[in-house]
Image (tube, rainbow, N blue to C red; front, side, top):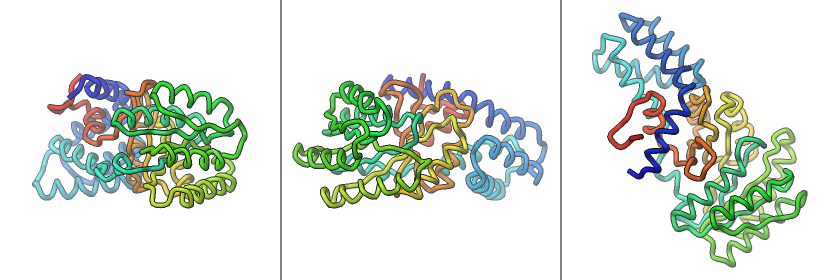
Length: 315
């Protein structure tokens, strides 16, 4: 276990302090405050999970699983339930190994998200992560509507040591993608990482733009592996869930990047999104540096949330 990973667990744990205060302290008070496992106990637990942004779907699944475990294991004391509850939350958030198939294939990754969620930064960090894995990466700066998005991305590309294809501000994003796809083929690139605009307030335009981009990729790069990631701000709770639903209407989402998890009281949203949308959280961000974006690990996340340290996790 590298120092970097240890540091990440430590930062994640610290970042989830407000969420912990929001959810875990409430859960503990239920476990310690009830003398029997009855309907009131389950109702109280359910309320705390929903208030903690874990969402109705995930909460129902977690409580259902807990009821089964209590029955199967003949548990009588509420305090004995905690371990089963933690296990049940982890199961809700499991990410399959196949979720990162794009790391092993020639891929095009579209990254979408509204302004201010850390989308462009996430593209830069992902480029760094993939480059460190020995992949040849090219960035396409196709968010041509936001002033300075191209410059910001060029800075990240420079930091990660990868090439970038840019268009003029206000130019057609699809033409940037066209140039980038052809450059990726000519340079035999492993991963083409595309920063795309996320103007959700104009869904029709966004839909048309993404359709156009998808047509170009399908036509110019047939057979390439496709990944569509949506970047969501972890501090916005249920709003993040709504954004994911909205983006899901305009494109086929394959994964979520959850940013700004350092200091949010709404970290429970990581559980909710996965359960409500059946789309895995693939990366989680807890800060500004490239190392602050890591693959999502449900064990690590839930251990950090409940302040449990496993053998592999250290400061």
